Length: 268
Ligand SMILES: NC(=O)c1ccc[n+]([C@@H]2O[C@H](COP(=O)([O-])OP(=O)(O)OC[C@H]3O[C@@H](n4cnc5c(N)ncnc54)[C@H](O)[C@@H]3O)[C@@H](O)[C@H]2O)c1
Image (cartoon, rainbow, N blue to C red):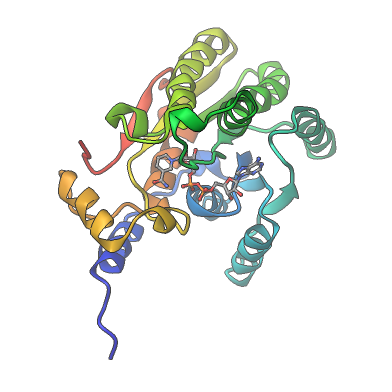
């Protein structure tokens, strides 16, 4: 028999942790960006398990369709819309159409990003703009598109995905980390301006989460190094991040806004 991968075992421990059900999430309309794979897919599945009505945007058709099919097999539902988030007019047009067709969104999760490595010397002006477009700009414009209908009802939740990377100061991620630092500032600004309208904005800061894409960057030895640097020795999986997002999106967090929450097993 093939030997069990200990990393899979600690990942499985983590997946078991997602158990809470929030009655306030039932029937809520949720939009998740980059929901086709990785953490976003975990968030989409998390909301569906809560009985929420979930739509996600992505450019990865194959992964996104596979997620929808996998969920169907488990009697869960999510709606996939192909949207390239770097195209602001298209993303805002799509949000407007979805609101017109099915009503306002209660919850927006700004999750999509791209952590391609880059060295300072290789960054051109085009690449700089491209990294800001893929990692930051859409978060503001998705929020801008859902805010008016949230405001009209006096409630709404925006959860942005940050990253531990810039807190640690990792190599070869200058522009990604610049965006991730900005997202914490964006969160505080949205919380201040939108609080009087009953709209909350928070940020979730993942540590290193075992997703298909992360396995591209880390060897088993690299993963073991990360676990060694964590206080807790489990390997983070998307469900661990989704668990925090569910809580922050629920009414249980009704007076929580403007802050960022680490889910990193104590990595430093
Ligand atoms: N995985 C980690 O260890 C980790 C650590 C810290 C922070 N994060 C953050 O968590 C979030 C999710 O990360 P992940 O690891 O699941 O990423 P991922 O790369 O696995 O998934 C991101 C998803 O966004 C989609 N996407 C990318 N560009 C897009 C675009 N232009 N338009 C539409 N969709 C697009 C991708 O197709 C993909 O499905 C990101 O904000 C990331 O920065 C992840």
